[in-house]
Length: 122
Image (tube, rainbow, N blue to C red):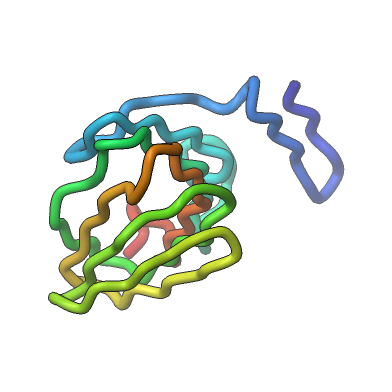
């Protein structure tokens, strides 16, 4: 349930919009914080889960962003540099950095994605 507070808002995963993100395979993304949902312009926050054999094509974004891995393993490529990420790993990517990812192993990878500033305000 989403519960508005005077200076805050709570969004539970059951209430967060869930989509299959573009240019991803075997992935789902739950959006928690975005200008479309709140009056926030500073950042966006999402939870992404990618199943074994899945990943994301090489893309760029106009904003800085980061991944924080909760569970599973993935290999991310940023401007040709390969990063092996697992639980507790964080990866920062500069704006316009070409990047993609692939799941490593036979378990899904779940990770938080943060864009700053929010993409529509970049």
